[in-house]
Amino acid sequence: MVKLLLKDLGEKMILEGAIIYSNLLVLLALGLTLTYITTNVPNFAQGSYAIVGSYVALTLLKLFGICPYLSLPVLFVVGAIVGLITYLALKPLIKRNASVEILMIATLAIDLILLGVIGAYSEILSQIVGSTQAKFVFANLDFSLFGFKGILFVSTFVVILLLIGLYLLLYKTKFGIALRASMENPSLAQTMGIDVEKTRLFSWILSGALAGVAGGLLPFMQEIVPATGDLIIISIFAASIVGGLRHISGALIGGYIIGISESLITYYLASAFGTGFLVYGKVISLIIMIATLLIAPYGITGVDWKKLKRLLSTS
Amino acid sequence: MIKVKNLNAGYGKLQILFDVNAKIEKGKITTVVGPNGSGKSTFLKTLFGLTKIYSGEIIFKDKDIAKVPPHQKARMKIAYLPQTNNVFANLTVEENLKIAGYVLDKDKVKERIEIALSVFPELKDILKRKAGTLSGGQRQFLAMGMALVRDAEVLMLDEPTAQLSPKLAEVIFEKIIEMRDNFGLTILLVEQNAKRALEISDNGYMFVSGRVAFEGTAEELLNHEKFKEYSLGITAV
Image (tube, rainbow over all chains, first blue to last red; front, side, top):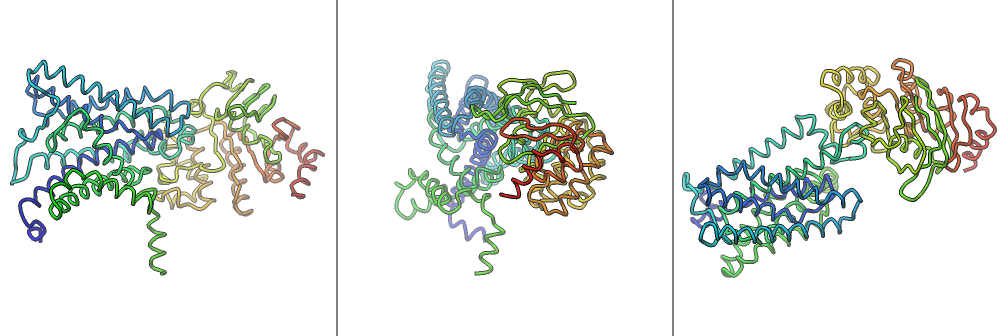
């Protein structure tokens, strides 16, 4: 059955790439959804968070010879710090109950700042190392197992590990339940003695950490330049919106739908109509996002499935 | 228990409460009544720190807590139950009860949950259900159970019987009496069901246009001309 689905090596590689890409998209969409739920901020800098992680991984590789896979814990911490700094910068606006539009523009500004910092940093690193570091990939460093790329195993393992960690945190710890309570009703959470401010801060730290890890893995499947964050942010938003911005599980669902759709549909269109279609992968994500906003504005997790089922069964 | 002095408060630049003076007696039920828009609910929210206070004092245990934020007031054993959205719909009943004990240590939480379930045994069979799927009455039981878990000394209830059937409302009133009598709670109650609320109360306040129009014992208020006019006004509407 599987062999029938994979007509040739090309399809196997595309499916492999789709799963890897989806894994990373899940991590990034989780962060975006988390900060949106807790602070109402749609973070346009989420993509650039990942690229900060990518360049830190590059630095550790070039200056200290550390394999990027082994750098992941460091990237988790670095990403967390970026998330923390962003939240502290946004906090005055959030306190003043700034509108979503203002918060959006603020994160765009932060994104541009990160872009500038990353660009400047890549030039500095180029001088230190003696060769250009403005663009890079890690694919040549990867190992192979059973004919599949190492990144497939590592990214899947990392996603599963982080999802288990997130589940245990949210459902099995006191702070996690408080976090979920704060997400649902911050003013009621305050009446319970929960310091909502701490839960918000934690969400941004976690969001940055997840992005940092995703950024460390991204160079294994595509070339990285300072502006890559602004390209992947499209898919990150599409994933969060398709899954539903009001529930964390939406990021998980949306991440896989968008990641796999973007990869496979682009591949099949390119097969049918020519390789020119490969550059239009983001259009697939945007079309799915627009369709979702038109048909189910709150995403898949926002649909009242029981009601829908009842409607369908009676008609 | 709580003394309010010359309190002026509202939302942003919209002032709702004007020069309010009040005292909430320890271990008693105090009911606040008044027509819609008189500032009753705002009074409760203000005591808990959910509104903008322009001036005045809120003395609790010899300290002015007017500027203390809500989550710190919660740790001072003051519990506030809003009229709606008073439980976390996406959390289970059990999780709601646990979160109510957020500031207590683990063993204490377990103990308090047992106490809450003894007053609200109706909750025992539905601990695993999402709070959002509960009926209005069950939800109110949960909200009040959460207040017990918190080991609060002061309980502020904003129209706990709103949208409940008269029979269920009566059960709620009985639970309120039980919490005062068995646990020594100081209770501040805002109710549209004014007559019945005053009948179970020790003290009463009547608010009109953001000001205290009457204060005294519940019995005095029940017999007061202003209250009769207010009751008649409700009937006329």
